[in-house]
Length: 134
Image 1 (cartoon, one colour):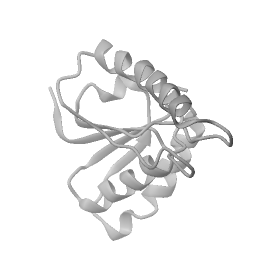
Image 2 (cartoon, helix red, strand yellow):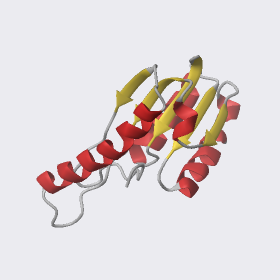
Image 3 (spheres, rainbow, N blue to C red):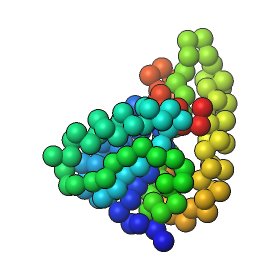
Image 4 (cartoon, rainbow, N blue to C red):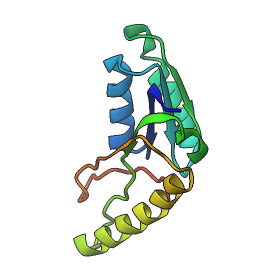
């Protein structure tokens, strides 16, 4: 059964961490799981974002894995690579497609029934640096 007050954020780069902070401040959810291929990064972001809770409603924020998305009402996918010096935009698109191709089957395996939102930043210089699926 879906928990309508739970959100999962996949990718803890610039876009993912900013989105997670905004979701925490919105008060729409009481639980948020952050997922990234770099588990320590997700744990650090969860701790950093939880420091803003005195300014918002109480929320359980934690780093998790794909098994934690099964009951989330919404999954926000922000994972993506940033463009390296000398890398073409086409090469970057190929890299980001590979990242999404690694994430989507993980969600499908869990027979997820909620809503999914894909969000990304400027995929050129300074693009998102989340590493989920990399």
